[in-house]
Length: 251
Image (cartoon, rainbow, N blue to C red; front, side, top):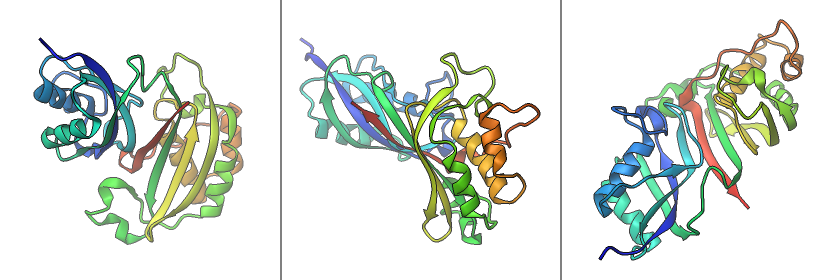
């Protein structure tokens, strides 16, 4: 007789460089697909994995949250160890633990945090850094970028900062915090926390703020874009490799 099953919550890190994103796709390497195969290998049967955020191809995570149903005989520590033994080296389960059976990491989340790294010094182009940042290798005006980021805080309409035609729940997001900070000694990082994010929103924001920090756009344009000013468009989205999902918040 099969062991009764319960739901487990996973805290995940992954290097998204060689994945086609989070969501499982037939014939494509994805984080969700790799987790499902690993769970099926250690426990048998079909194992559906739920995720808090559907990161795009090339995007990384140090705080993704997932859930799956497994035999109750596993402890969280045993489950994390067993999954890590069979997962690709680019995915790591930091922790696992039992949660209520109706826990859903996406629906139950009340906030998410992202971090985007921009390398401004030549050292950012090192092969040990460039996969996990935007190796721009140009000096940026951090104060201009910080001033542009301040207008994001609050409830704002981010229609101009989303991939067209992808949002069915509207474009309003409540930004709790947004700021630029130093990243090690080679660059800057944009950190943002909100109740929800639109598709490619952070990358469009970073692309536009980098143009402001390079002096190619005015700081006033950020507010004008949020207000939907006619004739203005966002800058190109920043590359995916600099983006990390760093945390998911629950009540």
